[in-house]
Each structure stands twice: as structure tokens, then as C-alpha cells.
Length: 165
Image (cartoon, rainbow, N blue to C red; front, top):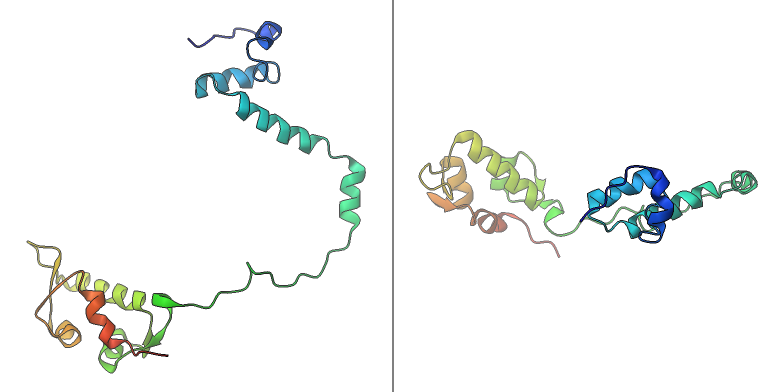
């Protein structure tokens, strides 16, 4: 049973039943009580404590924070750009794949994206089985097959990426 709270004057009576809800913010607690199904004590306590912490900041404390000179920042671990590795790393590709992509270097993800873009623009998916790609002359030179399953594309492309040690 959800209590209906007609006026804030009931807050003293409700204090004994719901000490952390109605006593702190009668109108907001009523809404929270209804929205959460009677389990608003912890939520309102957290909101109250963060609001109280913001309100208790004194002007002298704020002035002392503003008076401190800014320290020169050194690059932290979060701001240093990590080295690109794995399938996102741009590596040299075979001349056949380079001709298809129009670049001598590519990442594996970019190569697969461009091949799928080509497949969709040329309409090379089998209409009855969308998992199957019917290769045209360009794709036959890359894959060496007439038909390719969509899961085979990345595996068949791996021979076109030059291994670097």
C-alpha cells in the first residue's frame, strides 16, 4: 500500500515511519516514494548529502582555491596516445589488395569495411542466402573463389597482409 501525502504538515507524523524521506524534502520525497515504490531512503540521503556538501563551501575556501596558481601539467597516462596494435594497426598490404583499396597500407578493419561497402554497392550478396557472396572479377582476384561465405572474408584477406615482426 502506497501512502498518499496530502500536505507537508504530516511530516512530523511521517518522521516516525519514514525518517529519511519526508522529513528532509516533503514534496520531492512524495514523488520519489511513488516512483521507486517506497524505497527512497538511500537515494534521498545521497542527494541530500551532496547538496549539503556543495552548500557548506565557504567563500574563504573558494577564494583560497582560486588564489592558488595553476601548476604546469605533465602528460598523464590517460592523455598519452596508446600505440595502435592488432587489427587496427595499419600495415603494408599485397599489391592486389592495395589496388582494390587504393592504398599501399591499411588496417584489417578498414579493408573488411571497404570490401563490404563494395559488396553492397555492387549487390553481390546472394538474394536467397545473404550469408553468401557471389564474387565478380575484382573479388575473384582477391579471394580466388566464385562464392565466399561472409565469415570467410577476414580469413581470406589475411594472406594479403604482409607479416611484420
